[in-house]
Amino acid sequence: MKETSIIGAYETKHGDHKKLGLRDLIAEAGNGAIADAGIDRADIEAVYVGNYAGTGFNGQNTMGSLVATVLGLGDKPAMRLEGACASGGLAVRQAMLAVASGQHETVMAFGVEKMNGLDPDKTMKIVAEGQDQDLEGGYCISGPSGFAMNAVRHMHEFGTTREQMAMVAEKNFYHGSLNPYAHKQRIIKLDRIIKAPQVSYPFGIHDVSLVTDAAAAVIITTRERAKALVKKPVRILGSGHGGDYFTVAMKGDSVSFPASVKAANEAFNMAGIQRTEIDVLECHDCFTVTEIINIEDLGFVEKGKGGPFTAEGHTRLGGKLPVNTSGGLKAKGHPIGCTGVGQIVEMTFQLRDQAEGRQVANAKHAMTHVLGGPGAVSAVHILGRED
Image (tube, rainbow, N blue to C red; front, side, top):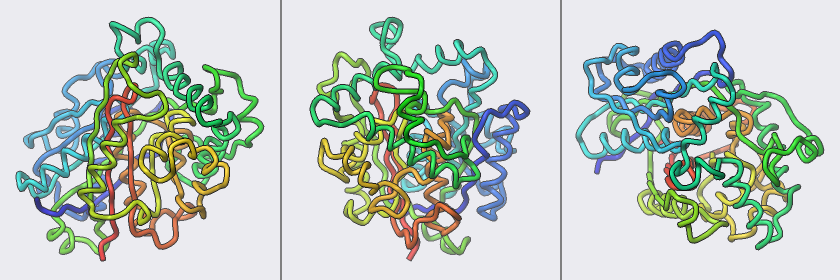
């Protein structure tokens, strides 16, 4: 396989974009990434798009071809990848594999979701369709209730506390306050998070991710070509894709997401580096407990120790392993199909020393992780600064 690198990265501001439509978001992100790469759009040979629910949110199918058309690439092969919240990560993986295999030399990975604009009940119904509708989602299992079960079991088995979960949110809101791309750019104090109105025990309203509009894009090419084109290309060292049962009742574990474990192991095996070499991590904090479980599943702390590791400040900027410097899904927001690509943009900024007030000093290796549906699909990427 050929080595691959990122030469262009761009994301729109995340938020509730009442004045921006789907096409506006697509145009800004795609054209921004092309400009950042400094290439002609004719050099892009294929487009891979992460999108969860364009049909439901926007009445739009065939999102891959729409993105390509809006960006003046309508005659290039384009495809949409959907894996619920992991959709953007899958798009990046397919784009990377297309270049690594030699099928294409330069491609675009894209993520977009325009979620706001519908009645809130309709929006939540569409979001809930990421569950098994026949057996669970149509009855009782939703994102909040499903992950709440994970939280309660983690609390029971390991003594994880409500306060430790709230610390995940407080930290991510702090990080988001430093990020001009974030949906929510303000600090929220710990006691307010703990006392917030409840959604599904033990989660309050600040423990859940935001309903967000955004688009993001990266340009991927061969490492050899990247070094000739830009001063600071970012290498894609490893990529992993893991799966697990879609139906919650069929899962064998409530305190771990096997899809994440598999994806991380595959990515590290490909990258050939150790977990201790990761300097900064963007992981899927759809709910506060999910970040705690994720840092365990990804192999950074022992199972059951994610809560104390967070409480000790190790995941905060300046800590042993800064996690979600963008603000994560809590503060940056969660435009479902865009999230995985936006994570790659954030880590590209980190490895190019462009993260400004949230910059991790001397970051050489970064990692991204997304988790889709009821823990059914995960995509992990490991990035490295070009030597």
